[in-house]
Length: 555
Image 1 (cartoon, one colour):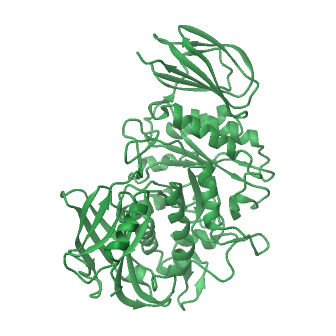
Image 2 (cartoon, helix red, strand yellow):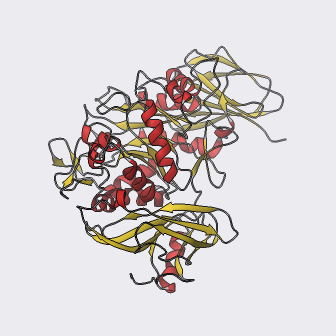
Image 3 (spheres, one colour):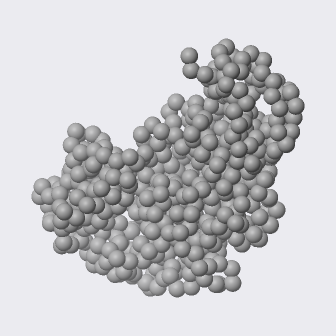
């Protein structure tokens, strides 16, 4: 058995876990034993001893291992799958199996069942318990049941999301087979200072590491080929992906994990799984087990599923979505990345529901088109009901010479996505397949839109009840045709403009209103009036990203 963690050590760790963290714990076999302690919405990692495995074995496919945790009150209860983790310290041989559990309520959580098809694991630690202490962590991202355009957190709070992209930063390599010199931890922490989400591939993709690989082939040799996805390499995931996800959890940054892609056939083949007779279930179960208990994790099944090799049909994607959902213990956000000419395929509408949100990709520069693209995904035509899921344009504007988008293009388009009732992601692209959007090395001196997007996101979070809003321009008269608006009728209204204009009119409902202008390019907030009533006239500045906020005064 692994040695038990002492009560003193666990008590010290509990204070750290209260802010969100991870603890590795174990206990003697069976009995009423304390297995671990952590904060609510932390990740408590429990280790088990199972059969010895090597790179030539296939535990992700051949060993079934899951547990059930039940809160002392009787509810909720979670069924969580475990996974083989080598020797538990990034080694590729060993007998360590891991369960990651995220307590969602304070109190005692009893391990009421440990099931496995191998005798060594079955029943191990059953009857033990984990103690969860209160924390300030806001929890999982779930679709808001009051306004499904938006996500909320488990604690009921709302944060607006702008995301960034580092497709292959886990490999540490860039063009020319050169080490990039990036640090996974520094990249995560740097992004967390400016963004709320980072999307990245779990594999090296276009810039793989020359020695370290995410999978083993049938001979036990490391490989980049996703067709061997049923043989995940614990060294890769322990040292790289775990580090990224865990650090992001500490920073409350969404880790948006791309399971297939973005570019190369090797990285996209994980869902094809040709070396496992076309069955990617072991890989999907492994990803759900390894990362599905992190409240900051989102999952994208494939990047640009519909245009690259191998490409996947909507029916295949929906089937894969149903498979991974069976193994995800919590309400992890799950979707797939569509690429033009598709906005969000209507073929999905006729298939069983599997996704929590919609991901679209349209490179746009202006407020109007960016807002309209979100709306088009939300409701593709006037004669069909809305899809009632949040929408994210995950490649809205890559700043830099690669796509010839300027800083101001990126800022204006992201304001547009917000006003369309959705979210958006950016990246820095210095050339074709070059720049931070692949290699990482986050640097605001290159990605100059980042400080402005951070400022806008902070203004939204601090001042605007956006989760109560939807696109609505009824109170505004004669605004420029490129402007877009949102409203919480009778309480708050927004208008975004991208050019100078005189004499815009807002026909305000009854009451007095405070009017604030946010110039995103200048990063300046100006209160225009605290007593606006009736027919209010105002001017838009000569700025590509100005946001006017009308808020009804209390009483």
